[in-house]
Image 1: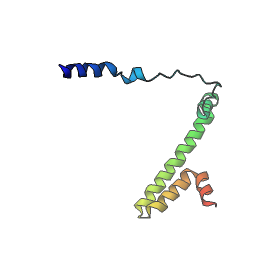
Image 2 (image 1 turned 180 degrees about the vertical axis):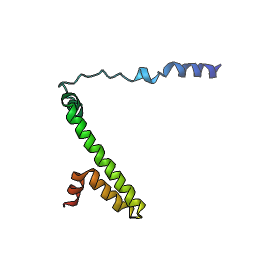
Image 3 (image 1 turned 60 degrees about the vertical axis):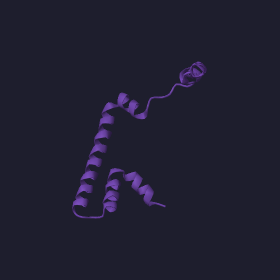
Image 4 (image 1 turned 135 degrees about the vertical axis):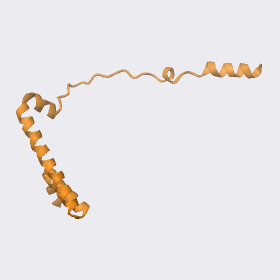
Length: 99
């Protein structure tokens, strides 16, 4: 009988984790956040957004084709990847090259 009384007492004292932890109340932002740049671009200037996306896609497609050509020619993987990244992201490659 003592075993039963111990088991009953332990189940009564333990609380589920959901009841023990206080729930956080959702806080409302104090300032209204502006929509994302791309969301605004798509809604305000859809033709310009389409032009930008087409240019980025062409550039990245060309970079991937150049990477595949370099690898097929048997060149070093890191050199081929650097060349492709310079095509896909021209600003990033010039900033990294300059000390």
